[in-house]
Length: 233
Image (cartoon, rainbow, N blue to C red; front, side, top):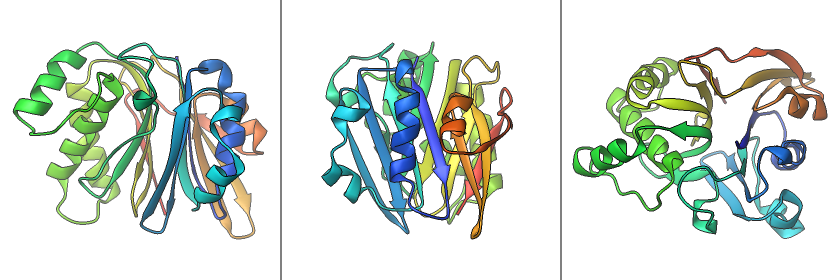
């Protein structure tokens, strides 16, 4: 069990992601990480430990931008090393960061396919890194330029077919927005929230609605089994 959160806002999201992770801390106490996007620049800080111990003031100052994702880890696959703290990142296509809650039951098979057929390098034994690379590979096939919502959904149709298990995911596509999705069986939870501001609506995805409540977001609904939501900038 892990905790995930993603926000596309009208103001900096670093502190709000931090606060959301503190109320999701019961879902994972081994590691924590935040990744933010400022225009096309990406910033990340992650390490083993509780949220309050991983992030210092200097770390938070570097996490600029109005969109981001966060993760607290309870390791169920791979190892408990700091190199497996999330979010994970790949630079192609576009630059994608991903936080994952769940398990892939065919991670070994997918790992071999990623290396042999998709020509992708995997640096850890984490099934989350496998899932990230499957998504990245499929998104690269779906579009040659800036991805549209249709491109993202088309790529995820194949992800749902290839990745077997229970999972909920938040992903940050650099320069574009945040994606959230659940496995076709809806085994892992993911909720969608919205908050009105003078500068327009803000959107949030989280493992539990308590994180929405913490930040005064209104619960819109659960993300459905096999559903993907793309929140663009």
